[in-house]
Image 1 (cartoon, helix red, strand yellow):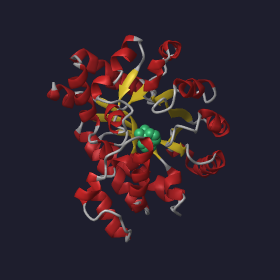
Image 2 (cartoon, protein in one colour):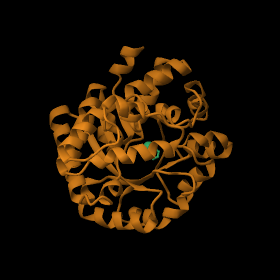
Image 3 (cartoon, protein in one colour):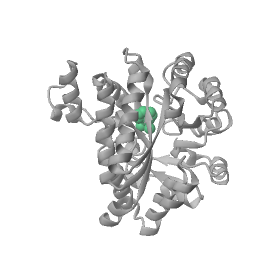
Length: 324
Ligand code: ES4
Ligand code: ZN
């Protein structure tokens, strides 16, 4: 089964590039940029990766991102991920980045997007992977801040396929970002949002009704609401699920509780993804292997999940036909 998973052509639709920052690269960049870090070794830093909930993770994750300062840092970060992704037989990746995490420290938007774009082009040439970037607005910041970020992005609109919403969910409902998401639709950005990770099913419903999102990132708490589940299936709204993430952030108690079977039985388009692999103990292959073992999945289940990844992507139909 492990060989089957390794060999399966896969798409990655839910991955935060800042969440691929491995401790080794973090220390290299800290040295290169003269940034001080709290932990004094790679091992000590890894030991700190024990989380109680989403917020306890986010605090450490934003601290880690402090080492990213220059165009070359974003290039190195993304290139390291694309090499890893290619080694796991990922053919297409739609990658989140959080500009506000960096612009608030004085990093120019241009340096972020140019470093990422140079990596995307090299990944296509050297590894044959196709990559899109999705810019996320941080939910714990104000909508005004998101609008300012949206404005900054317009100069680079052709380099960004769409927008998403991530970071602290509880207390930051979809309604808070209605204006900036409306503006995003108007300029032709595709729209996705994290919802129903820690937040209730109502947040998923509001993401659909108020924000008109095309995909829901996580969305597992939708299983608590039968009508919502039926709607997600009927409207073919894909969920980008991240099993190891949900375990590490205590959204579920153990992998056996991951509600994949309930979702599949309700005919929901499920995809498997890695979220923040450096922090959650594994990349996409580990996510597939973990659910396969805990939920006793068949090869047919795995084939469906991998195919859904391509179908739910923003790639043109011609590319999808090539992949599935
Ligand atoms: C995230 Cl797991 C998760 N949830 C929400 N926002 C995020 N940003 C990075 N990882
Ligand atoms: Zn995420």
